[in-house]
Length: 78
Image 1 (cartoon, rainbow, N blue to C red):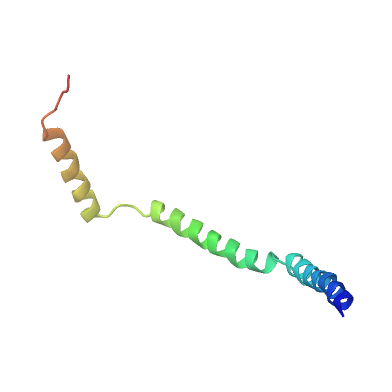
Image 2 (cartoon, helix red, strand yellow; image 1 turned 90 degrees about the vertical axis):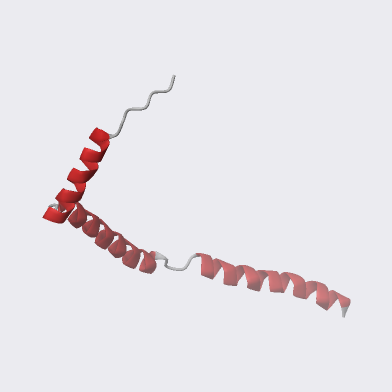
């Protein structure tokens, strides 16, 4: 009976290795297609956000920031 138990250990190892081997060699390209499509949508959205011209509200806010920087006193360390 002890010999049978020692023979079952390698048998379980072979079955486990076969299961792991089939899992490791599965087709993984299915997920890549959706991931690449999502990246393409992200890239398109980023290109569109930079291509949109600034409206009057944005231009006024930018102008006020520039004047605040110009009128701020210069600090020197030294």
